[in-house]
Image: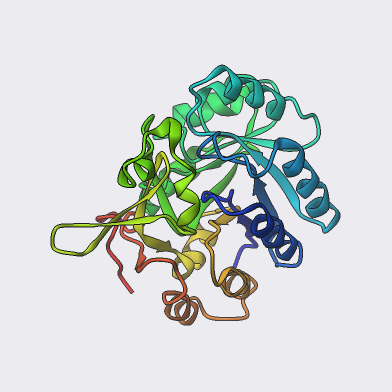
Length: 297
């Protein structure tokens, strides 16, 4: 199997400061190659400042990890733009641009094109490469067949990263859905998203898991799990597989992915084992060209 790096995506939930520090203290010892840091969902989440993220970044770099600073996926205020400029101009760490304003700030320097940039054709990918993108994260709703089309045309020197485990980020809104569900206005939300370590589950009228509210972000209720697809990804030339943080079992999940990537465990066996470790029921439908919430063992 072609060697692939494992990345730990940005923390999408609002955890207490002590829990975040403990999580990344553990991550320093996990067998991941790349760690994405920073607030990518809502600027009102201020348990950690940019200076705190940079301190964590230094500790992870000292532990041998490649560190990338992630930006917001939705920028609405001048204060958010100021922070974005500081991140883009940090001069030390690679930046993941999650919206076009961040791309503009990063243009001319190497950056990662995040999964929210709507890269749906090779022309867009080529344009981002011209601006400085050296890695792109494929949107979660695209399939393996689409990936193969991209791989056949991707620019020289461009790495491909796949969102391979975690609740899928589906959409963002100016409204805070968690605050709304708690009968609170967005401007006085009381940071209720912090009450839900893995997001607030939303069920359909027939009481089936449907979506997850995570502040202004909507996620899948199911947890995408592509560990069984790693051999095919390797054949397709994928460079990095991304695991999105959740509140429990991250050490076990990362160890399973590492075992498959290193050839120490069959992908099928690992898929059966990790299917029980996600925050939600497993799914892989988008990857296989079907409905996103489907799971095909």
